[in-house]
Amino acid sequence: MPSMIPVLPINSLAKVAGRGHLGAMLPRIQSIATGVPSFAITQHQVRDFVASALPQGLPPRIAAIYDSTGVNSRAIVQAPEEYLGPPDFGARNALYLAAGQQLLEEVANAALAKAGLAPDQIDAIVCVSSTGIATPSMASQMLNPMGFRADVMCLPLFGYGCAGGVLGLQVAGDLVRAEPRRRVLLLTLELCSLAFRFGDLTKKAIIASTLFADGASAIVLTADGDGPALGHFAQHTWPDSRAMMGWDVDTLGLGLILSRDLPAFVASEFAPVVDGFLAQAGLDKATLTEPACHPGGRKVIDALEAYFDDLTGGLVQTRAVLADHGNMSSPTVHFVLERILAKGESGPLLLTALGPGFTGAMGVLHR
Image 1 (cartoon, rainbow, N blue to C red):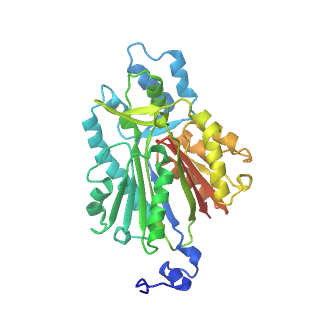
Image 2 (tube, rainbow, N blue to C red):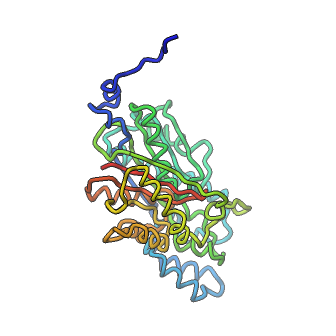
Image 3 (cartoon, helix red, strand yellow):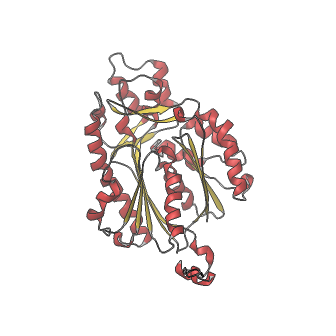
Protein backbone atom coordinates (compact mmCIF):
# COMPACT_ATOMS: atom_id res chain seq x y z
CA MET A 1 0.00 0.00 0.00
CA PRO A 2 1.48 3.40 -0.92
CA SER A 3 2.34 5.80 1.87
CA MET A 4 -0.35 8.30 2.81
CA ILE A 5 2.22 10.78 4.17
CA PRO A 6 2.84 13.60 1.68
CA VAL A 7 6.48 14.16 0.74
CA LEU A 8 7.45 17.77 0.19
CA PRO A 9 10.23 18.64 -2.27
CA ILE A 10 13.26 20.42 -0.87
CA ASN A 11 12.20 23.81 -2.16
CA SER A 12 8.82 23.42 -0.40
CA LEU A 13 10.57 22.47 2.86
CA ALA A 14 12.64 25.61 2.60
CA LYS A 15 9.51 27.69 2.14
CA VAL A 16 8.03 26.14 5.30
CA ALA A 17 11.03 27.54 7.13
CA GLY A 18 10.27 30.95 5.68
CA ARG A 19 13.50 31.26 3.66
CA GLY A 20 14.68 30.31 0.20
CA HIS A 21 17.22 27.58 1.02
CA LEU A 22 17.32 24.41 3.08
CA GLY A 23 19.95 25.79 5.47
CA ALA A 24 17.37 28.25 6.73
CA MET A 25 15.60 25.37 8.49
CA LEU A 26 18.31 25.35 11.13
CA PRO A 27 17.27 26.91 14.44
CA ARG A 28 18.59 30.45 14.69
CA ILE A 29 19.14 32.72 17.65
CA GLN A 30 17.15 35.89 17.06
CA SER A 31 17.90 37.60 20.36
CA ILE A 32 19.50 37.17 23.79
CA ALA A 33 18.71 39.02 27.00
CA THR A 34 20.32 38.55 30.41
CA GLY A 35 19.51 39.92 33.84
CA VAL A 36 20.41 39.78 37.53
CA PRO A 37 18.59 40.70 40.77
CA SER A 38 18.94 44.16 42.27
CA PHE A 39 21.11 43.32 45.30
CA ALA A 40 24.73 43.79 44.19
CA ILE A 41 27.54 42.73 46.49
CA THR A 42 31.32 42.73 46.12
CA GLN A 43 33.49 39.76 46.98
CA HIS A 44 35.05 41.62 49.91
CA GLN A 45 31.59 42.44 51.25
CA VAL A 46 30.65 38.77 51.08
CA ARG A 47 33.83 37.81 52.94
CA ASP A 48 33.25 40.40 55.66
CA PHE A 49 29.59 39.44 55.98
CA VAL A 50 30.40 35.74 56.39
CA ALA A 51 33.07 36.63 58.95
CA SER A 52 30.62 38.78 60.92
CA ALA A 53 28.17 35.89 61.11
CA LEU A 54 30.69 33.67 62.93
CA PRO A 55 31.58 34.12 66.63
CA GLN A 56 35.34 33.90 65.97
CA GLY A 57 35.32 35.40 62.48
CA LEU A 58 36.90 33.65 59.51
CA PRO A 59 40.26 31.87 59.88
CA PRO A 60 42.86 33.69 57.71
CA ARG A 61 43.37 30.69 55.43
CA ILE A 62 39.63 30.61 54.66
CA ALA A 63 39.32 34.38 54.32
CA ALA A 64 42.07 34.25 51.70
CA ILE A 65 39.93 32.02 49.48
CA TYR A 66 37.62 34.94 48.75
CA ASP A 67 40.50 36.80 47.10
CA SER A 68 41.52 33.94 44.80
CA THR A 69 38.32 32.92 42.99
CA GLY A 70 38.41 35.44 40.13
CA VAL A 71 35.06 36.90 41.28
CA ASN A 72 34.83 40.64 41.95
CA SER A 73 31.09 41.19 42.31
CA ARG A 74 27.81 39.32 42.19
CA ALA A 75 24.06 39.82 42.38
CA ILE A 76 21.86 38.05 44.94
CA VAL A 77 18.10 37.91 45.27
CA GLN A 78 17.77 39.34 48.79
CA ALA A 79 19.70 41.52 51.22
CA PRO A 80 22.71 39.76 52.84
CA GLU A 81 21.26 39.79 56.36
CA GLU A 82 18.26 37.77 55.13
CA TYR A 83 20.55 34.75 54.66
CA LEU A 84 21.53 34.55 58.34
CA GLY A 85 20.29 31.70 60.50
CA PRO A 86 19.29 28.18 59.45
CA PRO A 87 17.76 28.23 55.96
CA ASP A 88 13.99 27.79 55.88
CA PHE A 89 13.47 25.90 52.63
CA GLY A 90 9.78 26.75 52.42
CA ALA A 91 10.43 30.47 52.79
CA ARG A 92 13.35 30.40 50.39
CA ASN A 93 11.39 28.47 47.79
CA ALA A 94 8.56 31.00 48.07
CA LEU A 95 11.12 33.70 47.29
CA TYR A 96 12.41 31.60 44.38
CA LEU A 97 8.89 31.52 42.93
CA ALA A 98 8.09 35.21 43.39
CA ALA A 99 11.45 36.87 42.64
CA GLY A 100 12.35 34.25 40.04
CA GLN A 101 9.21 34.84 38.03
CA GLN A 102 9.75 38.60 38.15
CA LEU A 103 13.32 38.24 36.87
CA LEU A 104 12.25 35.81 34.14
CA GLU A 105 9.52 38.18 32.97
CA GLU A 106 12.09 40.99 32.72
CA VAL A 107 14.53 39.03 30.55
CA ALA A 108 11.71 37.45 28.51
CA ASN A 109 10.26 40.88 27.69
CA ALA A 110 13.72 42.16 26.74
CA ALA A 111 14.46 39.21 24.44
CA LEU A 112 11.04 39.40 22.78
CA ALA A 113 11.44 43.14 22.18
CA LYS A 114 14.85 42.60 20.58
CA ALA A 115 13.36 39.91 18.31
CA GLY A 116 10.38 42.09 17.40
CA LEU A 117 7.90 39.52 18.71
CA ALA A 118 4.93 39.69 21.05
CA PRO A 119 4.37 37.01 23.71
CA ASP A 120 1.37 35.60 21.82
CA GLN A 121 3.64 34.83 18.86
CA ILE A 122 5.66 32.31 20.89
CA ASP A 123 4.71 28.65 20.38
CA ALA A 124 6.88 26.95 23.02
CA ILE A 125 8.71 27.96 26.20
CA VAL A 126 11.62 25.90 27.51
CA CYS A 127 12.49 26.83 31.09
CA VAL A 128 15.73 25.59 32.67
CA SER A 129 16.13 25.89 36.45
CA SER A 130 17.54 23.72 39.24
CA THR A 131 17.60 25.98 42.30
CA GLY A 132 13.97 25.78 43.35
CA ILE A 133 10.78 23.79 42.91
CA ALA A 134 7.85 25.09 40.86
CA THR A 135 4.73 23.01 40.26
CA PRO A 136 3.00 24.17 38.13
CA SER A 137 6.09 25.22 36.23
CA MET A 138 7.49 28.73 36.35
CA ALA A 139 6.82 29.16 32.62
CA SER A 140 3.16 28.18 32.98
CA GLN A 141 2.72 30.73 35.76
CA MET A 142 4.02 33.43 33.39
CA LEU A 143 1.43 32.81 30.68
CA ASN A 144 -1.36 35.06 31.91
CA PRO A 145 0.76 37.94 33.32
CA MET A 146 2.79 38.22 30.11
CA GLY A 147 0.09 37.48 27.56
CA PHE A 148 1.30 34.17 26.14
CA ARG A 149 -1.32 32.01 24.40
CA ALA A 150 -3.11 29.35 26.42
CA ASP A 151 -1.96 26.68 23.95
CA VAL A 152 1.76 27.50 24.18
CA MET A 153 3.91 24.46 24.99
CA CYS A 154 5.67 24.74 28.38
CA LEU A 155 8.67 22.48 28.91
CA PRO A 156 10.40 22.76 32.33
CA LEU A 157 13.88 21.22 32.62
CA PHE A 158 15.20 20.50 36.12
CA GLY A 159 18.52 18.95 37.18
CA TYR A 160 20.85 20.19 34.44
CA GLY A 161 22.57 22.65 36.80
CA CYS A 162 25.53 24.45 35.27
CA ALA A 163 25.17 22.48 32.02
CA GLY A 164 21.62 23.75 31.55
CA GLY A 165 22.49 26.76 29.41
CA VAL A 166 23.94 24.58 26.64
CA LEU A 167 21.60 21.59 27.05
CA GLY A 168 18.55 23.85 27.21
CA LEU A 169 19.66 25.50 23.98
CA GLN A 170 19.90 22.06 22.38
CA VAL A 171 16.38 21.11 23.51
CA ALA A 172 14.92 24.45 22.35
CA GLY A 173 16.70 24.08 19.02
CA ASP A 174 15.35 20.55 18.57
CA LEU A 175 11.80 21.90 18.98
CA VAL A 176 12.44 24.25 16.05
CA ARG A 177 14.02 21.47 13.97
CA ALA A 178 10.95 19.28 14.58
CA GLU A 179 8.59 22.05 13.46
CA PRO A 180 10.34 24.89 11.57
CA ARG A 181 7.34 27.23 11.96
CA ARG A 182 7.63 27.00 15.75
CA ARG A 183 8.92 30.06 17.63
CA VAL A 184 10.63 29.05 20.86
CA LEU A 185 11.56 31.06 23.93
CA LEU A 186 14.35 29.56 26.04
CA LEU A 187 14.50 30.75 29.65
CA THR A 188 17.09 29.98 32.31
CA LEU A 189 16.83 30.98 35.96
CA GLU A 190 19.08 30.14 38.88
CA LEU A 191 18.93 31.70 42.35
CA CYS A 192 21.97 29.89 43.73
CA SER A 193 22.19 32.14 46.77
CA LEU A 194 19.07 30.50 48.19
CA ALA A 195 21.17 27.42 48.96
CA PHE A 196 23.77 29.37 50.97
CA ARG A 197 24.32 28.09 54.52
CA PHE A 198 26.29 30.74 56.36
CA GLY A 199 28.05 29.39 59.41
CA ASP A 200 28.92 26.16 57.59
CA LEU A 201 32.72 26.03 57.32
CA THR A 202 32.94 22.87 55.24
CA LYS A 203 35.02 23.27 52.10
CA LYS A 204 32.07 23.03 49.72
CA ALA A 205 30.03 25.57 51.72
CA ILE A 206 32.89 28.08 51.67
CA ILE A 207 33.39 27.59 47.92
CA ALA A 208 29.66 28.12 47.38
CA SER A 209 29.75 31.42 49.27
CA THR A 210 32.80 32.61 47.29
CA LEU A 211 31.53 31.65 43.85
CA PHE A 212 27.81 31.22 43.22
CA ALA A 213 25.32 33.96 42.38
CA ASP A 214 21.91 34.64 40.85
CA GLY A 215 20.84 35.43 37.29
CA ALA A 216 18.56 34.68 34.37
CA SER A 217 18.56 34.67 30.58
CA ALA A 218 16.15 34.52 27.66
CA ILE A 219 16.83 33.48 24.06
CA VAL A 220 14.40 33.56 21.12
CA LEU A 221 14.88 30.85 18.48
CA THR A 222 13.17 30.54 15.11
CA ALA A 223 14.00 29.01 11.73
CA ASP A 224 14.02 32.35 9.93
CA GLY A 225 16.04 35.52 10.28
CA ASP A 226 19.80 35.93 10.05
CA GLY A 227 20.92 35.07 13.58
CA PRO A 228 23.54 32.45 14.46
CA ALA A 229 22.39 28.95 13.46
CA LEU A 230 22.55 26.00 15.84
CA GLY A 231 24.72 23.22 14.47
CA HIS A 232 25.96 20.04 16.12
CA PHE A 233 25.19 19.59 19.85
CA ALA A 234 26.10 16.68 22.14
CA GLN A 235 26.00 15.53 25.76
CA HIS A 236 28.43 13.15 27.48
CA THR A 237 27.78 11.66 30.93
CA TRP A 238 30.53 9.83 32.78
CA PRO A 239 29.55 6.67 34.71
CA ASP A 240 29.77 6.63 38.51
CA SER A 241 30.34 10.39 38.65
CA ARG A 242 27.32 11.62 40.61
CA ALA A 243 29.54 12.74 43.49
CA MET A 244 31.15 15.41 41.30
CA MET A 245 28.26 17.88 41.42
CA GLY A 246 24.59 18.12 42.32
CA TRP A 247 22.15 18.53 45.21
CA ASP A 248 21.67 16.61 48.43
CA VAL A 249 18.18 17.18 49.80
CA ASP A 250 18.00 17.30 53.60
CA THR A 251 15.91 18.98 56.29
CA LEU A 252 17.36 22.38 55.33
CA GLY A 253 16.52 22.00 51.66
CA LEU A 254 19.06 21.86 48.84
CA GLY A 255 22.64 21.09 49.92
CA LEU A 256 25.51 21.44 47.47
CA ILE A 257 27.54 18.49 46.16
CA LEU A 258 30.79 19.80 44.69
CA SER A 259 34.06 18.01 44.03
CA ARG A 260 37.40 19.77 44.37
CA ASP A 261 38.74 17.67 41.47
CA LEU A 262 36.90 19.52 38.68
CA PRO A 263 39.99 21.26 37.18
CA ALA A 264 41.86 17.96 36.94
CA PHE A 265 38.73 16.35 35.49
CA VAL A 266 38.63 18.96 32.72
CA ALA A 267 42.17 18.07 31.65
CA SER A 268 41.91 14.29 31.94
CA GLU A 269 38.29 13.57 30.97
CA PHE A 270 36.54 16.55 29.37
CA ALA A 271 39.34 17.49 26.95
CA PRO A 272 39.25 14.20 24.99
CA VAL A 273 35.43 14.36 24.84
CA VAL A 274 35.63 17.84 23.31
CA ASP A 275 38.24 16.55 20.87
CA GLY A 276 35.81 13.86 19.72
CA PHE A 277 32.94 16.34 19.50
CA LEU A 278 34.94 18.74 17.34
CA ALA A 279 35.98 15.89 15.05
CA GLN A 280 32.33 14.86 14.60
CA ALA A 281 31.43 18.48 13.83
CA GLY A 282 34.27 18.70 11.29
CA LEU A 283 36.03 21.48 13.21
CA ASP A 284 39.68 22.12 14.01
CA LYS A 285 40.26 23.48 17.52
CA ALA A 286 43.26 25.49 16.31
CA THR A 287 41.10 27.55 13.93
CA LEU A 288 38.35 28.47 16.41
CA THR A 289 37.87 31.93 17.84
CA GLU A 290 37.18 32.34 21.56
CA PRO A 291 34.53 29.80 22.65
CA ALA A 292 31.64 30.53 25.00
CA CYS A 293 32.49 28.41 28.05
CA HIS A 294 30.58 28.16 31.29
CA PRO A 295 32.99 29.56 33.93
CA GLY A 296 32.81 26.98 36.70
CA GLY A 297 35.47 28.85 38.64
CA ARG A 298 38.97 30.31 38.18
CA LYS A 299 40.77 26.95 38.28
CA VAL A 300 38.28 25.43 35.85
CA ILE A 301 38.90 28.35 33.47
CA ASP A 302 42.66 27.79 33.85
CA ALA A 303 42.16 24.15 32.83
CA LEU A 304 39.99 25.14 29.86
CA GLU A 305 42.55 27.69 28.73
CA ALA A 306 45.23 25.00 28.83
CA TYR A 307 43.05 22.97 26.48
CA PHE A 308 42.34 25.92 24.14
CA ASP A 309 46.06 26.68 23.95
CA ASP A 310 45.82 28.21 20.46
CA LEU A 311 43.86 31.21 21.75
CA THR A 312 46.28 34.11 22.04
CA GLY A 313 44.16 36.03 24.53
CA GLY A 314 42.68 33.11 26.44
CA LEU A 315 39.06 32.92 27.56
CA VAL A 316 38.65 36.67 27.96
CA GLN A 317 34.86 36.87 28.05
CA THR A 318 34.49 33.79 30.23
CA ARG A 319 36.83 35.33 32.81
CA ALA A 320 35.08 38.69 32.55
CA VAL A 321 31.64 37.21 33.24
CA LEU A 322 32.99 35.29 36.23
CA ALA A 323 34.55 38.50 37.58
CA ASP A 324 31.41 40.59 37.06
CA HIS A 325 28.71 38.08 37.99
CA GLY A 326 30.20 34.96 39.59
CA ASN A 327 28.90 31.50 38.71
CA MET A 328 25.14 31.77 38.13
CA SER A 329 24.85 28.13 37.04
CA SER A 330 22.81 27.60 33.84
CA PRO A 331 22.41 31.24 32.65
CA THR A 332 26.13 32.00 32.91
CA VAL A 333 27.16 30.64 29.52
CA HIS A 334 24.50 32.84 27.92
CA PHE A 335 26.09 35.90 29.54
CA VAL A 336 29.37 34.83 27.91
CA LEU A 337 27.65 34.09 24.59
CA GLU A 338 25.96 37.50 24.58
CA ARG A 339 29.30 39.26 24.96
CA ILE A 340 31.01 37.19 22.28
CA LEU A 341 28.22 37.65 19.73
CA ALA A 342 28.33 41.41 20.37
CA LYS A 343 31.88 41.42 18.96
CA GLY A 344 30.47 40.67 15.50
CA GLU A 345 32.95 37.95 14.54
CA SER A 346 32.17 35.26 11.96
CA GLY A 347 32.75 31.52 11.76
CA PRO A 348 31.82 28.62 14.03
CA LEU A 349 31.47 29.28 17.75
CA LEU A 350 31.89 26.49 20.31
CA LEU A 351 29.87 26.38 23.55
CA THR A 352 30.82 24.19 26.52
CA ALA A 353 29.54 23.56 30.03
CA LEU A 354 29.84 20.95 32.77
CA GLY A 355 27.05 20.00 35.16
CA PRO A 356 25.48 17.35 37.36
CA GLY A 357 25.49 13.84 36.05
CA PHE A 358 28.46 14.34 35.81
CA THR A 359 27.77 15.70 32.32
CA GLY A 360 29.61 17.60 29.63
CA ALA A 361 27.54 19.70 27.22
CA MET A 362 28.86 20.99 23.89
CA GLY A 363 27.37 22.84 20.96
CA VAL A 364 28.32 24.78 17.83
CA LEU A 365 26.82 27.98 16.50
CA HIS A 366 27.42 29.08 12.91
CA ARG A 367 27.65 32.84 12.68
